[in-house]
Length: 599
Image 1 (cartoon, rainbow, N blue to C red):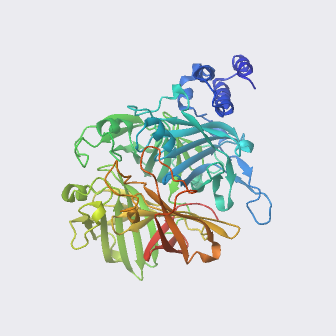
Image 2: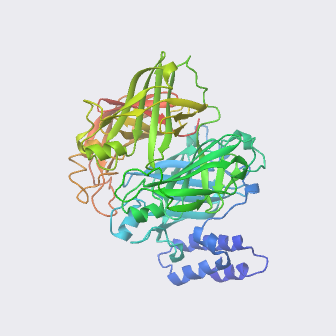
Image 3: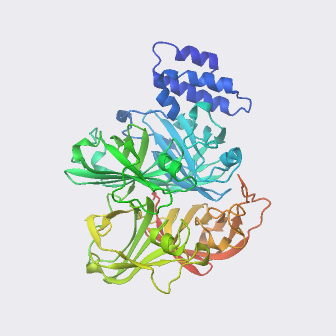
């Protein structure tokens, strides 16, 4: 189809605004592969949908909820040993790694029953956007492809929109900065691979609210238990968002966290986790029409004051798309349920339990992980936080990591009353001082429902996100790094007797002195390196070598595996379990928890 033909079609009276956007998006994908695409042509394509400016800005088709009942499927040929194809729902959130710059990526697929998909890709650091900006920074852009036919997911382009210097939200009117190869292939166990760069992803969020399956019901229907943790992507700047819902039959508390709220970013440039949005006591029958108050950390402060006025107001306004999918109708952002699963095991003092809960510190907007390990009636509890404000204030540990809270030998029938001891690092590079705790935190857990607990002291809620699966393949997270309280991650993908193994942390301590040789900008402190071995024999996972590769310093630095040697090679071992696995790095054992779905 030519641009002229498309304009003729778009200008017919029968052509709806969404179809005009679809034509514009299709032309962007077709012509985007050409380096000769001019700004004049981009502007002409945008003009096809100028009467629906909100949709043009978002570059996302708003599939109406009635068409989102079943989800689209596609054939996954060649992924099974029998060679037979399988068909399954593609809709979901997938986590993986950009192994060229050692950053986690999240890919969102939203497919309708007409077999068209929207694709959103976000990355903590798009190296292409860094090269465009000329500086190394986090949260630099978003990749979007709309209306991709399911049978064309193996051959399509993703428009990459980069934040420009001085911007806090992407200007979509300028068109994509460049195009990335989409080209998705299905893998066994529910994973996918972008065949261009070779990055693989595991599905971590799927529609799982059982009360909404095959029903067209209102978000205000009290028969539906919405309680849980949901994940989404802010398409205006590419940041990750987390939505928490905790409802009774009468009212709901809604918490929204963002890696980088635009309003808060203006107050605290260069920082992340600097705010939180809250809506308390929303009537259960008014979830389609409510507001969320946004609170930002005041410049130079570590916590949000209890009497601090809101810095802004956001639209909540939720609606169902399909079972387990929510949408904020004002922004068009979609949220996928992360946990707990409907089949989560009931809590009992009469049985052992090992699991991981995720939550938010609503006093500073940071992310927390609560680990509960109970055996023979005795429990060990640990609490991780991306930034313990107490450690930052008292030990000058920097704003990221540097603390871990522990409670040992707590009787399982006394989890409602215990204390966590907080240990901090003088500086992250030196590691945590376990000689004596810096402070005591209130533990005191109350079970709100299966898979959801509350620390009754601060009032923080935590949601069980571990997936109980027998397969080893998948994405694992939140293993405790004793030296700094960080989050050990692992990704395993096995095919035809050979496995790709990735081990990753935001701050890789094994990189000190090699990948991290000094403070920024001389070195990258976060996402500076990655452990990877793409050819581990499946029968050797309990004893294999894995290499640490450094990301070159400078804006847009990428690892060249053809010319770079690993900075370090260590021995590793992986022992499989249900819902968790144990990975040993150079003699240090980490228990990592399975976040991905799949068999």
